[in-house]
Image (cartoon, rainbow, N blue to C red):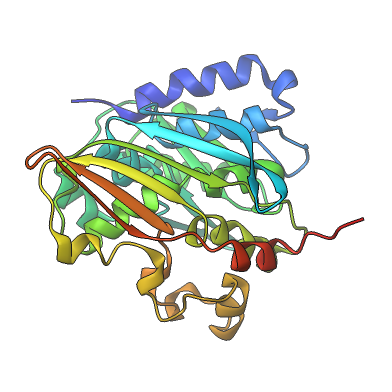
Length: 316
């Protein structure tokens, strides 16, 4: 069985070797664990964001950047591709592990989840586990983890703490903004999982989304980065099997919260994700090619108006 942690280590090792070029900083803690700062005390870089995504997908996806237009506005866009979407997304990339040790709180994603089986429901359904002796975790936080947090992660993953590597970036930095847009496929796969589709029948996936400009206010950054997918994320899947009733429920447009910048929804929910309709966390549109029938289907649409309102870009 594919090991998302062993594959991710290859990506992370390269990040460590080229840390200066990537504008990231590597910390070796007293207990031997490794923390890679990608945007807290350093600026990070586009390339660091791309490597971060690939590590977070367990080495089973690729990411690249280009420039496209929304209206007359040129913006950075990310393209993500995987031929192992079920494992890469649900088995690794999904942000499904809330890390909380004393005052430290961070959302955990990445391959380490496959060792800790967090959340177990996902891994039971996709029938995936990893038995690697190393662990790579991605933490969305504005604070670097210490030895106690890294030991907590090691214990949950049942590996030696010296074999744990944490990639860390806040939403309010370039890498953080790249990372969220890089989840465009994952949002579609997770939504299909929630709707009951067997995601192991997704054979190939590619997606694209704009990279939100960096916003220094954390809550507004959460809003604009999510809007990149909700209002302008596009996903193309190749599957074995198609259920019209399921797939038409995938795009974010089905959510009762759709139609306004996510920051407003987040604010109305008291900045508590548990108070938000989960259907909003999905791409704007999806195209599905079903190999069983040889037919292709599309649903959803892009919203230039809302995405530009969310980004709040001023002309000069």
